[in-house]
Image (cartoon, rainbow, N blue to C red):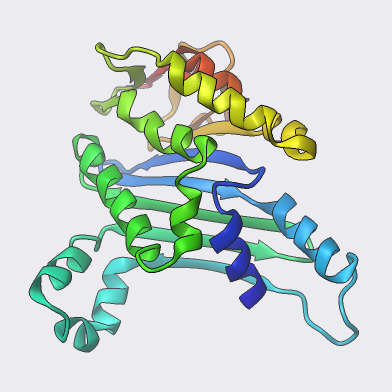
Length: 262
């Protein structure tokens, strides 16, 4: 397991991975927002580099499927947290809505990490996004390798994306749109293109990265405005996938309105 923690610390958000933005709504409008990073290719590469793609005889392959709610962690670590300075206690307690998910199955080549937050209404999402950033910075506080990843233009692009995205949901219509004052930064695009150009052999992998939207609703979907979006067979999930770099260049292609049945 330690080698995978190293992978997370050194390659998370710097590696060729696919992103998934998922929102699950409950009947009362509350829900859960999760951004997941599919790092299956990273796991495969690390296995090949460290063991030639083979596992030692008798060694069990790693299999993990876990969900960590910070509010549960606060209960388990209450005594330890109580010994911290009040400011640090308040900071940690403010993260109680954070959710972290991890799936790893070496046998099936699956490795994904998700970070997100629960919310009482979608109006709380901006605050939830701030808490997610806070949780990430909390993990990297004393880890230079974790701090280093934020310097990547790819990482910056994925993190900054939500600064110009608006979400709305009234139980009948869900919208993902660009903010009215959004202006695309040519400097940011140039920096992103420059970084990818300098990636050498990894360039093709980075250029193939995808970003997927997954929205789960408690009611059946009547229609969706984006022609590239797909509705699930049960009619309650909308999915839209696009090339990550192209999305950065044309974010309007990932906007949509979802109309639900009465």
